[in-house]
Length: 328
Ligand code: NAP
Ligand code: GLV
Image (cartoon, rainbow, N blue to C red):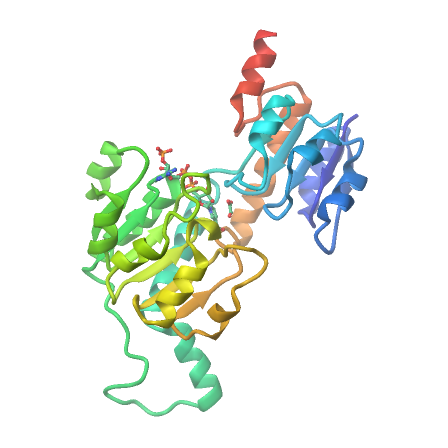
């Protein structure tokens, strides 16, 4: 019997699967645990199912001597020191694929909401009432159909964003670490250096993971290359954009607007962003549909059960741990 710690309120059927497999399960409900709380709850745990807001650093890993697997409830693993986990022989898993379409949908929800000023119009209607149909209302927005979409990070989510763009008759540019010839053909997308993409796009959607290379990928200089009428959508990670520089660009109307699901210092939101009319903000809910969250929970449990059975988890991030084990 292994002890499995789940750091959040979880689907009961997934807890039941762990129990049925003979494991003790500790589920934490309520406020985020924080480091001390996590260490206290998980001291003898062999498996951890964690949230993106749980920081699993080397100190945490070093204090959990029985730990065999950290299963992240999310695809991005920047909340986990994967290198330290690998060094310590701890497997790290994530939840790719199952959340791709939901996250691409949210990117589009933000894009359309900013372009057509949906949230602003809704807010004004509630506060001021329906002003009557006018020809030049204060909520005049931007066309989306037929425009140019620039996608930064052309992996699973980036390509899912592109698939939706075809229905909007858009020209699709992408920038990514490696060229994707198959996707280029299938989606009619054109590879572009980042600067060129920023200059040419009417809508820029960020879909890269957070890494030392992508931190502040968009700073003041990059933002200054964008069209005055362009919209930036970030469903990747907050620190991919220099938030201070973005606030300045938005305040000075050097870009049209932004749709942000992620923030540089979550759960903090830059106070100036809250005051701006040309932004739409959501609290990191890219994958937050019932069906997707169920699939993420099930995948995290599949990963844990496999690891505890001594099998390779289906979505293992640090495969070196497994290879080393297999050849030991
Ligand atoms: P993915 O399939 O791995 O795609 C990421 C893409 O970014 C890959 O094509 C990768 O290139 C590219 N890339 C990596 N580093 C780059 C760099 N320095 N410059 C340019 N391109 C770079 O991952 P995914 O499943 O699409 O997820 C992407 C990210 O979205 C996650 O890591 C997470 O941070 C974020 N996310 C957010 C939410 C949300 O709730 N808002 C939900 C899900 C995911 P290669 O193909 O060469 O590796
Ligand atoms: C969400 O942000 C994820 O990485 O899954």
